[in-house]
Amino acid sequence: QVQLVESGGGLVQAGGSLRLSCAASGTILRIDAMGWYRQAPGKQRELVATITTGGITNYADSVKGRFAISRDNAKNTVYLQMNSLKPDDTAVYYCNGNLWGVSYWGKGTLVTVSL
Image (spheres, helix red, strand yellow):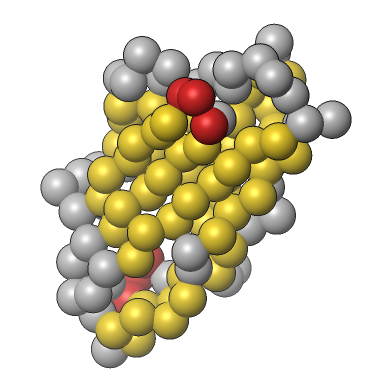
């Protein structure tokens, strides 16, 4: 059973930075596309960024130029470097990974950005 475990969330002041990590376990196969999504209180879950095994990335307009997604294929790990954080970035951030057409989700890590 594939499991995704996020880490790196926390409380940060506006303008600060955080780095999220997500490690996949339970498989020796390379996870296909991986990504980060977020859900703010009272809002629907939304895409933040995705990355393919080949390194092709896609970002939500709201984070372009501030966030950077990367991955280590050998470790089945994906990262999200978040810079210039804003209070609107406050949310639970979820890791997503796909393997053989099945989508897996982590339990989420909370990011809180204060003024």
